[in-house]
Image 1 (tube, rainbow, N blue to C red):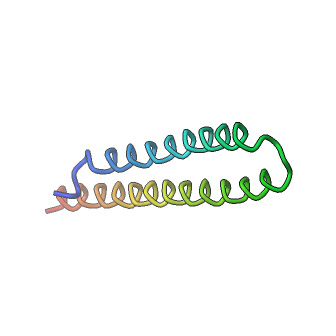
Image 2: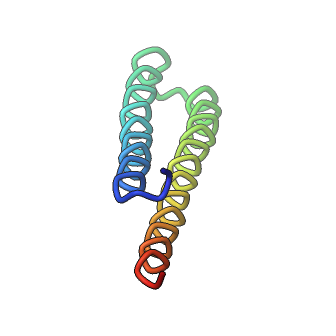
Length: 86
């Protein structure tokens, strides 16, 4: 049954996990880049652009999953109301 109370919570947890992994990946990538290249201008800005694009992709993924959880939560409420009216 996809419209049970636990489904939105589980999907929301997946979204939070995705946000957490994005944060950890961002810190690890920044530390790796600084340890390899230092703050040399051409490498630093090119790598930071790539880094920001990857971070934006992951944040969009997490936001999309969070939106799916919200939609499913609305579906659960509608299903509960329908069950009460029958």
